[in-house]
Image 1 (cartoon, each protein chain N blue to C red):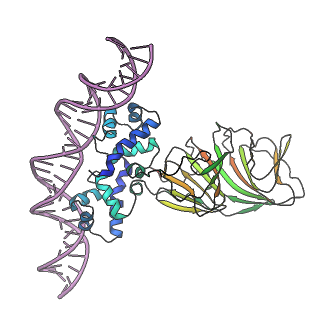
Image 2: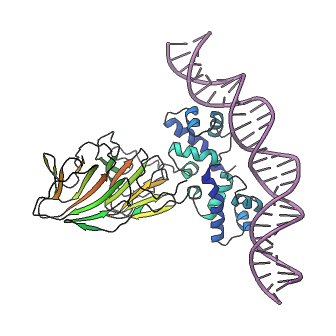
Image 3: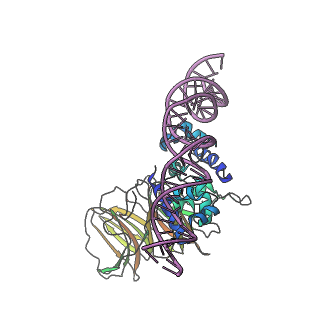
Length: 185
Length: 185
DNA sequence: AAGGTTTCTTGCTGAAATGGCAAATGGGAG
DNA sequence: CTCCCATTTGCCATTTCAGCAAGAAACCTT
């Protein structure tokens, strides 16, 4: 057994607990029996892709981050004001069907972990340069460029270069299809 | 079998071929028998993490890029339209339920006629000053301000002052309900 | 086209892992 | 203590596995 895999189960369990879900709940979402999930989390069952892929979807993490997690730098204190190096200004009231934010991405030194979640996201770069990792793509968006994508695809967004990037972000969690050229299914 | 997994084998094979390696070579690197690799590539064997992780190392790709299908380019570039003193840059593909434009309003001398049509519109002022006549309201929006309104209300939009105004406009003809709202930067 | 070499596929085997029901265990609240 | 919910585990018919060795296919070179 590759030793990276030993941590997969515990990580799944940790994420599940952080969401306050029970075995049965997550097992139902991922369409597996609670016992299977239990054994997977406790390492008594091999972590197969068939098991892991539905889980990553519901847990909102990428496969690689389960298998090869980024360890937080212990020297860094938990930021208090900023969230994940972003300054977020909501432009729509809470509860809107469409959420809009102006986000300033501070320059980062580490590439953040790609995430997945339900919904669609639309981006417009007001200033700066933005790096968008989306599935197997690696794009740099500059001022005036726009992108939209299915957020169920693993994605990471961050400023590239030494200057912050100002971005207008429109996020729709309903899964309303904002564009038509996805090649899913 | 999850259908994402069907493509894993062929992708491995494609990468191996692109490197000009034989089954035996890659199998030796990843410490598995050629037959196992053959069956994995041709989908006759389940893609397990034990198999995949050593392969990703030698193939130089991430797990997610093997499992996640490639996504279309999310960037949008469409020709700019000039009309009625506006420079309109569509940011979404035609036919989207949500249309997004970057509009530059040139300074005008005459106040345009208010118009009505179905849908909702959402505005964000990137630069300049924008005058919004909406029903009996008369608003001036400046950089960083946002507004959204029902376009069935008579409305006119134009730059105020001597400088052009750059606006991001999101228009939804489906009639998604949003209420009028402005926010400071 | 023939022969030889490399590359790939497949039949076969005991061994190992799987899935999920049902029963057992654990642990907190009353 | 007892109930209840979450989790673990015993069980076992069934499936999958690993890799050797033989067979098939592709690809040379002459």
